[in-house]
Image (cartoon, rainbow, N blue to C red; front, side, top):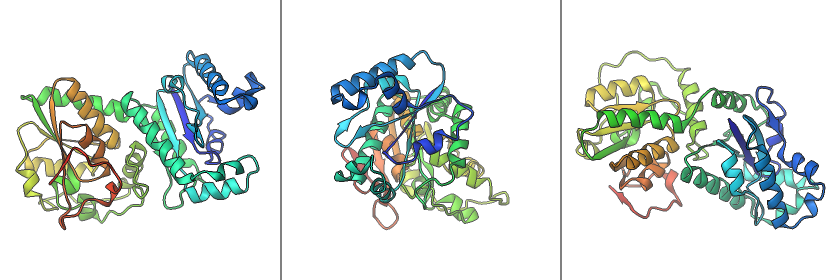
Amino acid sequence: MKIGLYGMPTAGKTHILDRIDFLDVVEGSKMLRKIWPDFDSRDETGKNLARKELADMLKDKESFIMDGHYAFGDEIAFTESDGELYDIILYLYVSPDVIVKRMQESEKNRKYLNYDIENWQKTEMEQLRAYCHSHKKDFYILDNPPENLFDDVTEALDFIRDVISGFSCLSFAKSCVVKILDLCKSDTVVLMDGDKTLTMEDSSHAVFGYKTSIFDGNFYTGYQSWKQSREFANYQFDDLERLPVGINKHVLDCVTPDTYVLTSGHERIWSFISKQLRIPFFCGKQMASETKLYVTMLLQEAGKHVVAYGDGMNDYYMLKQANEGYLVRKADGTISRSLIGKDMEGLIIV
């Protein structure tokens, strides 16, 4: 397994890599300068050629984690060879305010302060995520709200260990699709988000008062769903005897015999809701926005017409990919704040 760890200059990639003793660590920046001592004096074409050569050299290496940079200001450092090299891409997110402060204190990186750091970082995440989507690769943003920096990298290291052990949103999506294709009887498959789409409220909050800051960054990758599953483990609740939340009747009316719920909600709660509504569901710590996207893509590749319903950022890529994507408004008629600034073209708002 080949893992790329990306992030802004001063984000702290080395802080994480220095603590990895369970996987071979390749320090890409140092290796480039060791093999090509003139690397820093090369023009961008020459630098990208060196990066490509390094990626080609590492293709036969079985497993490792290596640091990388998508861009340096306006100059894109990420090459197609980099993308082909990695099985999984991680992005280390640190608050732009923290990045700026660190750059101010770093003579080496002070030159980057001429750029809009927030926009630079946002562009990197969006472009790497889009690359992984189009090439069906796992992509995870590592963040740590509300601090938005990593003094303690224990949780990030635990996640990387789980990734090495098989945690994969893409693999989980494939397993869901195998089951869906075995169950479905028609050419049209309806995919529905659970909480706040099929239900009126968040079921975990309704049942055991769940609140979290995990999704404050609005990333909704598998890292955030993985962290949520760890938080869920700290809560206990009695067996349910009745539906704990209201059901969105307008969405329920759209249920067909080939409707399947994809939810990042609590499995015990959704097992109960699923039985009550007689709608099959899929959930788990790997159920994230990428999972829903890949389920949609794989069903389409199998010849299915996909209709999707969702309410927020965790459903966004699924809705955009679906043949028909329905964005469900909140009870007050507004759209989820998680979608502010997102391209809504092609989505049907209901």
